[in-house]
Length: 444
Image 1 (tube, rainbow, N blue to C red):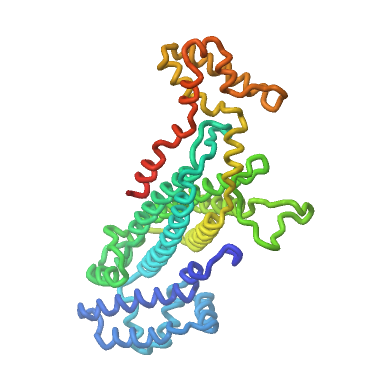
Image 2 (image 1 turned 120 degrees about the vertical axis):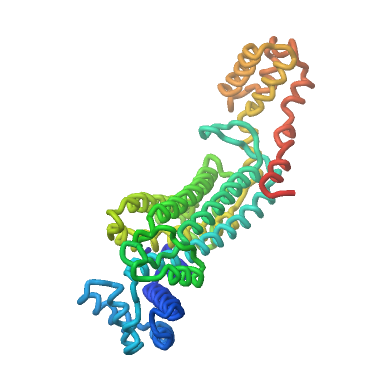
């Protein structure tokens, strides 16, 4: 990813230095397990640990160039690394990689990187959940209009709006935890995964030390359905990011103006129009979410490999592994900051609630009329007549509001008093169960 959309903590997981240190750890742990089993001499395992640790402790640019130079000759990345590593170990390096195949190192390393990336993403979501909880509580009882199809529907609270997103990100967190568990698998099973040249106890030892599970049947590579599930989980999280960002974008529109991104001192919205305050963060998040979702499809295509293995997945994962996790990490961080600083305008929410003359209470009047004895069909027709009359006269001199149009309708007035109508249209009725919904999501 480009530095503009990258955070150093996530970038570091995918750096060449980090990858080579994980490769070494896998090789050293395997050698130590083999030494315990008597496959290789114990002094050789100790030499591998000692010499290799010193070699990878401070990998320099010159070391990276040396590895690249070897790979240009051998055309094999793992052999290039093992050759470079062996140069710092000495004769005992001949016991490196005994009975193993490249995928044992590559796939197990990828599992470590993906679990570390998942840990950062889970922490990102925890931070976002905290911000959403604070803002949802802050506006728990702040009335605003709910919209369906972009049109005023019925009143809700701004806190409930945010609570819905909070509940969604709780689900996203659970999905990431499950995805992490699915990719946290180790394979040290040798060519075509039969363990013919490496004892299964080596795999168990490496897996335990790295905090991974053992892959039940690796067929030389870890099956890519696991990775597909991981990247699909990232894509679903990204869709949640976009849903919240889209809400902010709509609320910031000039015609709505109920909430907006924090506008910093000295910030400029347009090179041409000095008045502009644009939703640039949420628009940026929308674009980043598209990228993350785009990485899910190549991961799905990676599942169908030839026979026990091929490497058609390899080039894909070298791109989507870093890019998807780095992009989502940045997006979650940006979303958290945006929501923590979101500027909210309750007065404007109240203005918008009242802007249609009370028609947003139409369902409550409909129900009250049916309970007063009018058929549902007649009740609906009467309420709709009053609502349409209100709509059509909005802003015109002498226009009547929804309540007045209802009382002027003989069919309504014949079965409902003004007091009963006011009771039906009481705004407090919209928010009776707000606290109960909060308890569902946040607990008591």
